[in-house]
Image (cartoon, rainbow, N blue to C red; front, side, top):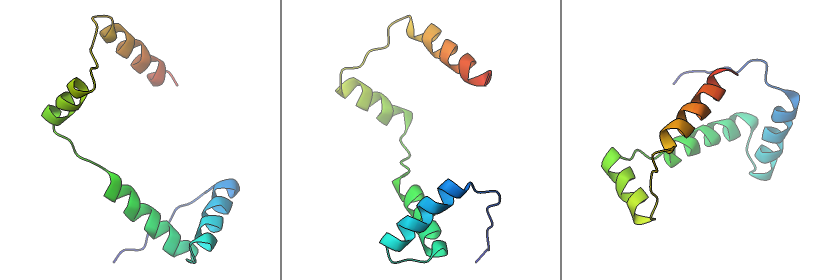
Length: 80
């Protein structure tokens, strides 16, 4: 096992984690570990083919203007 440390956690976030830990009858450490475990369990790894199949199954299309939209959105995020 490895010990991890998170520094400079905002008080508001710390309070929320403590409240959740109390609701779940866990220690703060136990709640953090449970949160980490849940986040990796929920992570799904789809192949590009599976993504395409899902997109097609719900009827989404990609108009030619989508490339410009994606670039604009990406550029806006990179300027932040």
